[in-house]
Length: 255
Ligand code: ADP
Ligand code: MG
Ligand code: MG
Image (cartoon, rainbow, N blue to C red; front, side):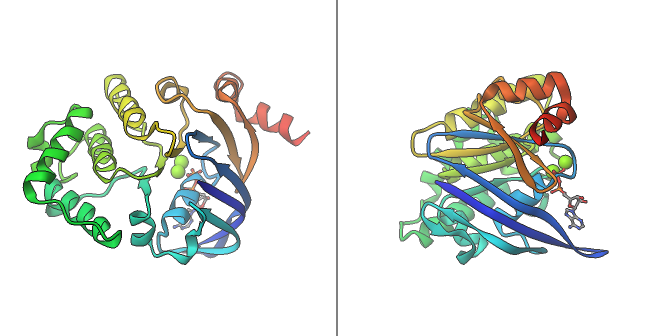
């Protein structure tokens, strides 16, 4: 479903261009949850941003194919309409726009791109209510402005409601567990399972913590360090990282 080959990318920062991704290769077949772990500053969020097409990042080498298509040949909105979803480490607030307006507009513009009929207001509300229920979110919350005044945990749950409504084939979730208390973590994790665990879907799950992986059990775990994947294994790799830390596991990979 997603094939990343020898990806190189730079960020255009205050100090000029800086290479962040330095030959990253990774394949995620349909039906799998692939967890990405790695030290701060390794390039995990950069990978998510490059996949989503965020401005300010320049791809300087390598390729990414998504469902057999050249991902970089698609604009960000085309990537989304083709089934790529990005969950942000820090979801943004959109004052003046309600969640319901935002989500209906997002869904219908994607449907239009795919040549599908738009959902009516009634159809949309029914769908939104079902997905909000999955995340134990009140419809009243969805009538409020996007993320304005939401707690960290509410923002993450609202984002998972958005994912449920858009129903993507592939989700890149960047530290979706950050800032969640234990109950919210379970609700969000189970939401990810019910929305994304399917033979024709896949997830790239960026996280620092085993506690999310206890709920969303990964098929594969990779360590991203200094812009590359340095080790890949099964779920036991995450347990080892938690017990021994990145340095020990990475030193072994280097040897
Ligand atoms: P991670 O998510 O693994 O913690 P990031 O991808 O956020 O790491 O960052 C990787 C490196 O790129 C860091 O050194 C960070 O400071 C740098 N970086 C990321 N985005 C920018 C930016 N917009 N401007 C300058 N430097 C950036
Ligand atoms: Mg980080
Ligand atoms: Mg990050």
